[in-house]
Length: 272
DNA sequence: AGGCGTTCCTGGGGGC
DNA sequence: TGCCCCCAGGAACGCC
Image 1 (cartoon, rainbow, N blue to C red):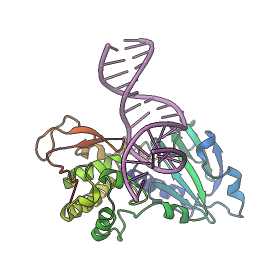
Image 2: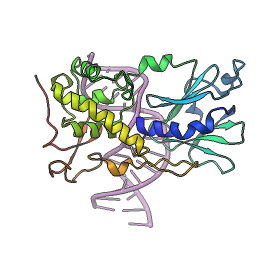
Image 3: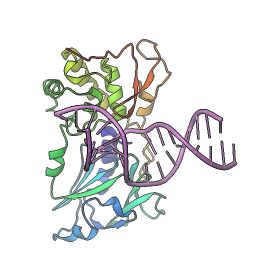
């Protein structure tokens, strides 16, 4: 479920509650939730497990400790909440106990979500591409990334090793906004359209973060939910009229993913 | 290199 | 109501 804006929203909510707290331990409810370490490994170094920072990299929530980072990936259905005395939700996969009697709950219906332990960001940085909201994500760099490859544009945008943070929803929204058909071949798209795609990606992600994401995220903190779902333009709009041209939005399968398209507005580029 | 199918899981919705 | 099938916003892996 969560893409960059949803993960950023989670981080924004958790930050003030976690920074400065100490982690007492991690309770494992679903054994596979810890991907590359065992709970006791947290105590290998004489770390007091104080949370120094919480931030996002790609779709990971990074909890910065003294000697490690915990990287939490929500995958499809992961959710984080902070609770005190309430019972754990049904699909809790792990619980991080904090020094103020609060608990960070990792709830995950489909159990795809994982927690990783690393010394620093090197491993993640080596596998994940540029942050689309960073200053270095220039229009020129974006064009280079796209035009030097001969790939399906939707698949390329979903590839986290090229650009990190986009998922199925925001890719469809960005391609619609820039008038590019998702089955276009990357290297054959015009530079003008790529300029528009670059702008669309940034503005859509920013809008979505401002709306606290698309997904309904259930924070025990304040109960706020994502509002971007009401602002989606094509995703999930099969049979609706295109906001541009009134043609019907259709649903396709592209790269194995449900894909929403206005065939009239979104030009397909297949050759130079 | 890139595309494709499979896999990890549970639950919701549509069709009958 | 019940059952079955398909679908789901992620991503790693192996194979061609």
